[in-house]
Length: 162
Image 1 (cartoon, rainbow, N blue to C red):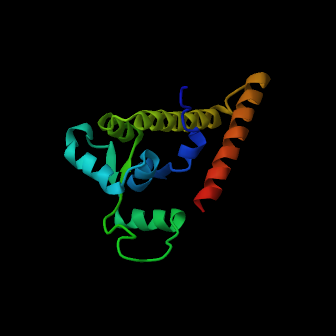
Image 2 (cartoon, rainbow, N blue to C red):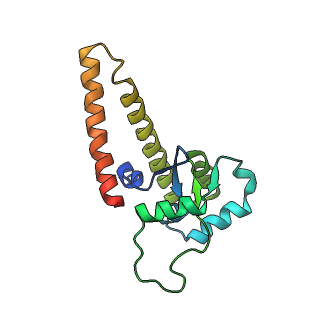
């Protein structure tokens, strides 16, 4: 029996915007792929040729603090609970290249889900941008429907990230 690909809305909650780009933080990449964050970063370090400039970025202290205050709730502090380094963030291209390093069936399944999530966000942005430019009523109603259903997903993701 064929395994079903992870629902894209589960992946979308990990996508954040940093420096005007949609990205996923290394810790979230590790959670999605079911590996440790240090394994993600080690894979990047061992394969620098797969990550040209712009595929992965290092967060600044300010960006890290901003994301932590928005996204993370620290539980019990303790040894090894929090990274002493600023996270690496992956663009869609960086995630795709990371997936080429991993060879498991789960990696393939997760990568397809990530690509679907980014594609859905791109379609939403396109629909919003073209909403005012549409003169035909049926097409405008169709775009309105797309925007409304996408807004519901985004609201759920925002609430989950609070």
